[in-house]
Image 1 (spheres, rainbow, N blue to C red):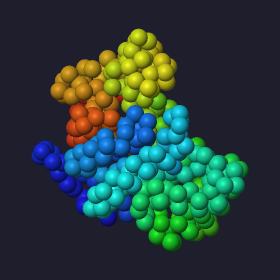
Image 2: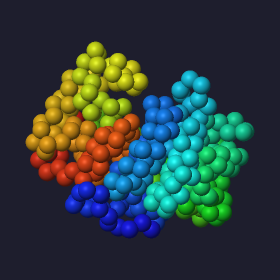
Image 3: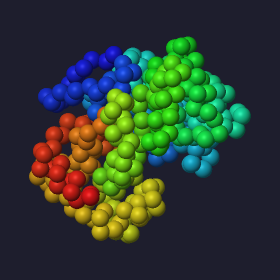
Length: 330
């Protein structure tokens, strides 16, 4: 288990580690999203970003075997490969980080995502790319209706017993799907999912808050949320259709440009001005303070953005701030 408290370099505010379910793993309250590696971040930049992130007192890195296959010319695994090359160049970093990766978004050798064969092949490929002997948290990336959940959990059990994986979790689960997985773990005496990774942010609240959060709280499951900044919309950088060309993600942000979205940005602007912070830092701090959330995932493509993530992890919002933001997004 990692130390319960540590200090970010150059700052006096300590960050308290948060447990990931009953896994024995602990993470700082913000996770680095490495989906940008091999997409908008090249390898030399990735190395600098990861060094800065860990030196700032943060410790969890999220990736997947399919990142970043959506980029023309990529096949998937580019993100894991960059992380593995970073670890090879700085071996001492391995004990400082919690490595999170995923399997099952793409069909495995038998055409299924979460079959025993797909998981067995997937973990070996990820370990090879990451250049490590273990994955700290291995997630089932998305539900696979073609594979019985018992088969998936038995495959994960084999990885835990062999020491290749320390703990398991799921992503994009429905309430019923996660309940079934937990029930199967209990009745068959199999390892359970200790972490859920859903989409959740100030704009997209309903799916997580409608039952999934309560289940995770009841069962003591850690929650790491993705799209924490709504693909960058909550940074405040996109306020009109003319702004959509500012990044590679612009095309997916148009859906937020509506009265509710503008109301959320206005609330973020007001809290940010009062706190001397950026809107993105406030949006992340709101998530960190939400009941049931262990940590949000956020990406960075520059050192300045990594420094901003560290500030967000330490930012304390008042009850009034939190209420204003929540009301604006209702």
